[in-house]
Image (cartoon, rainbow, N blue to C red):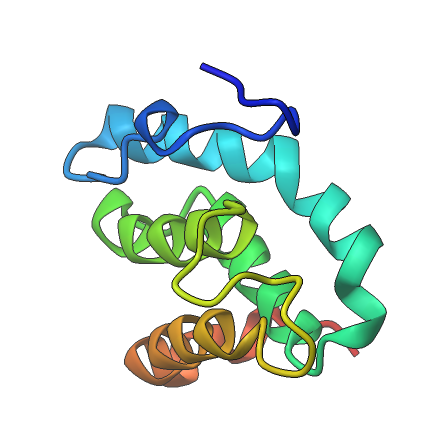
Length: 118
């Protein structure tokens, strides 16, 4: 269900990525919305390059769905407008997003190095 701001409500999102089908569904959501968010805010985000590396990892067919589920969860959190700290809050709006992205980067570690484009 959509609200007055044409933003999805929380009930529209299934944040449980515990099967290949749910990971694929989450990946489609990321594909649909990531570029809009990055286009709108990417130049203001110090971690936009990390988000792009995570996306490249997500679309790599050699990566198992178990590993992708972690990335889908982080990227869906990044693109969903319902955050712990709203993205429109000056200076602090992306701290929670940065925390989630940083945790996933740390978890995946050197696995992500090939996904950073120079």
